[in-house]
Length: 115
Length: 112
Image (cartoon, rainbow over the protein chains, first blue to last red):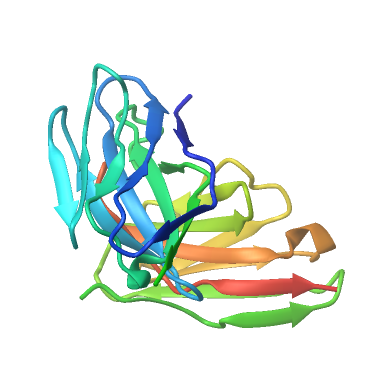
C-alpha cells in the first residue's frame, strides 16, 4: 500500500534560518504529492503540491520538488519566520482506483521558530 | 474560497453516548472525508464518500459509521463512544481523483 515517511520532529530554528523537512514516499506509479500546514488550533491548509515528476510546488516562500528517482518531496524554505511555526504534513494521493481519492499522510513535523 | 465547516470545535461526552459530528462544505464537491488526528500518528482516514448515500471504509472504520443524505453534508457517528475515541476529528472535501482536499477546523472530542 501507499505510505509516507517524514522527518521526526520537533524542529526548532532561529528566525531567518534555512528549513528542510524530509519526506519520502512509497506508492505505485506517479502519485500526486502535497504539503499541508496546520497552525495552532486550526485545521489543515494546503501549502503546495506537485502532480508529476520534476514538478516544483511553491507557496509563501516554501518549495518542494517531486523527485521520482529518490521518491522524495522535501520541503524547503530559505529564511523562516516566527509565523511559520506550525505542524507540517507530507501527503500523497495514489493513482490506483481504490486510493485515487484518499490522502495518505506522514506523521507530521512540528516546527517552532524562535525570534 | 472553499469553506468546510464542522458543527463543534470542542465536545465532551460520556462513555456509551451516541455522538454526532457534522460537516458541511459549500463547493459542491463530490468527495468528503473524515479523519482522526492523534499525536505521532498523523491523520488516519475513517470513512469517505464519493457521492450521496455512498460510503467507503478508510483505514480505521471500527466503532464509527457515517451518513451522507445530501451532497454538502457528511456526518460521522460514534454509536457508543469509548475513551479511545478521544481525538481531534477533521472533515475534508474535494473534487475528482488526485485533487486537493480542503479541511475544516476540526472537532476536539473528549470521551470521559
